[in-house]
Image (cartoon, rainbow, N blue to C red):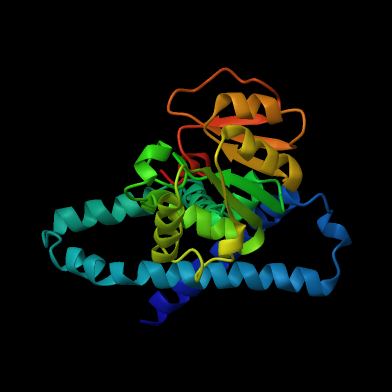
Length: 276
């Protein structure tokens, strides 16, 4: 029992040393700072991190103990087999054990340093280049409908685009706009947006949902608001606004030729932000 405890401690010490060496190499690659220039407090922090990783690794490995004991009980009892096994363990090169310990330490550190998957909020901020004002048409982007005639009967918010839209409203000044023919269309749109929770969960207010009777009217809205981004499905409007708007997102099922360096294209709003 004492020999097993001593062997465990020696193995743990060796693993800590090798882990510290590998971790120091990793940190030096990540940060252009010489380890010789670190003060004792910084060195202690690195060592503490190494010890924490080792003990976490040990805890994760602990469920394997019963299995090892079970395998030991099932081992053959013949004297010749026991002698052969013992001789094989004795003849195992120390260099092989050393390489296994290096590999274990490397795997622990690599797993610990894996990049964290960004959240949707981080992706939206990055994609929009921290833009603070966004204008966006409704048909074909936020709504399922694709023509003003359909809006006279109903308006349906696209559930796949809703999550992205709510994230945009949390840090952007968002304006939604659409061409409509009758007052019933306006009522249908506002009711659909309200039922989707955009006016409550997000930062959008009804006064920022704008309506016009022509496509040129939407162009005028965008020119007056001067947003950082405009999102639209009409290629003519996108082309006209390319000189005046910093960035544009052209929503189109078929990828069009890029009309300008500041115009991006995507089959849908959520696809542009990697949500589909």
